[in-house]
Length: 201
Length: 253
Image (tube, rainbow over all chains, first blue to last red; front, side, top):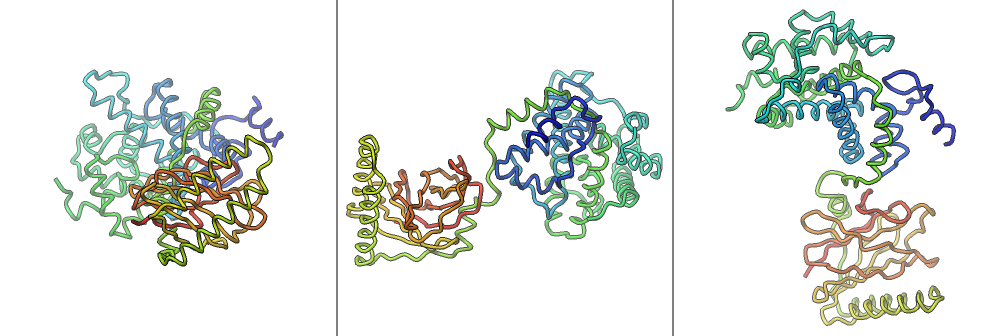
């Protein structure tokens, strides 16, 4: 217990992403969190705070706002852990869905507000944005490689929807193509990504 | 404006990426419920989207950790979904047996009264405790003596039975158990009043004596349509049930 605490607060903790000691299955941890287990929640934090913050920041851009939304997301994980259903997907996907939805909700709320501030509107995403964070993590290598296997229009549509938080009509408007085309591109692109990354289930 | 039928299947991708408008999403979720192949595809694409998320990982500001963890300490968690754990266990356990026969009622009250007396005798050691016990005892005695008192009992899933004497006029119920197994130190039996609307309110902890019976517990504010439920919780009890109950009894007029 003491050892775990020491290592978790150590400044030597390696880079972003999931913590070193994150060997426990997030689904098992969430089951414990649902029962009010704070130690399990700390372990979930250490495994997923990096991806949550990274994703929210990717969508929102603004660091202060991203921190605030990331906090909301992680608390939501604590609060609603009993609603996680392993039959419907992995724990990581569940948490990332909450994170993405919160970030996108924030973008859309800001965009529909009367005082629309330009800086809160996400800019279009370039390939470099995806690549800039790529270092050694396998996830990143694989994602980069697999995004590269998509057609350029598929990759662009997927990135605009996911990383910039745009809706179908917004993506269609930006790319100047019909709505149906965007729907097809996003689905085909994601299916190709899924197969490339060897996602099962 | 509903989505064209042939187009619905295309929405799995946008659903995984949150690119649907609110209307589209609601419609698509209804469609998912009756389209297993769509649900399977949506699930796989959701996992794929999670990989896109993992690739963006950045170390959050260090102070976020303490803020999130301390906020969690102050944040109440949602109970499991559905109509609440009490309702679900009630369905599993079936309707509890209930006897309105006068003989049964009298026997139950005698059992309860004996339990009250025995527990008062063995557990009270200070005058302060005596006062509290006497107050509880007279409240319990009032329910037992109420003209509209009725008795109900139900099996407890982990063993033993739970018995309640309820007075709807007093809006109170006295609950005790017999032959329930004692729990590890870190666990307690907790009694809940569950409203028809699905809210659960703690009525306190049931302390198991060595005999397997529990100190009679008074649940106040009990209305017809409510349920009484018992769950096993961490020591000290919880604000809301966190486990499926081991016993459930409806409160009926």
